[in-house]
Length: 193
Ligand SMILES: [Fe+2]
Ligand SMILES: [Fe+2]
Image (tube, helix red, strand yellow):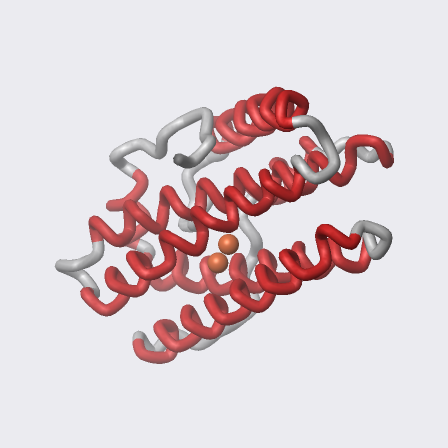
């Protein structure tokens, strides 16, 4: 089960498919950022042994997703390029409190919610794409289990450092914040747009 405070509306997938190459390029950047976020936590918290192997594995898996999206970009004839980031990540990260007592918890929960939203939207693309690009639809379907597992893994890691009550309470708040960020953003051709 994905812990999200809102469901993506029915207009999102048709809009994403109307700008599919832009969304696919955004997706490539997101997979690379997901790997980078995990590696950043590895460097920021070398004292937390519990984080090291799981986040290293997660980062490698995200880079393999990155390479998978690169293959689909190439197949579709879309060059990989720099792209203006969407508004979502910056606004979402405002939920991360900067004091040392809460920063790790919030970082893990923001990671968890991003994974959940990605998983939800990959599922919508997998359902909507078969008539447009069946290979890409199958690729999105193949990512669902991994992204749902990443969502749970970030929660499990948070529970290595905080009680499950504390994690659940804060998760609700972060998920509410994420839903607000999505609702306030103007539509843009991004995976989290
Ligand atoms: Fe991924
Ligand atoms: Fe992921």
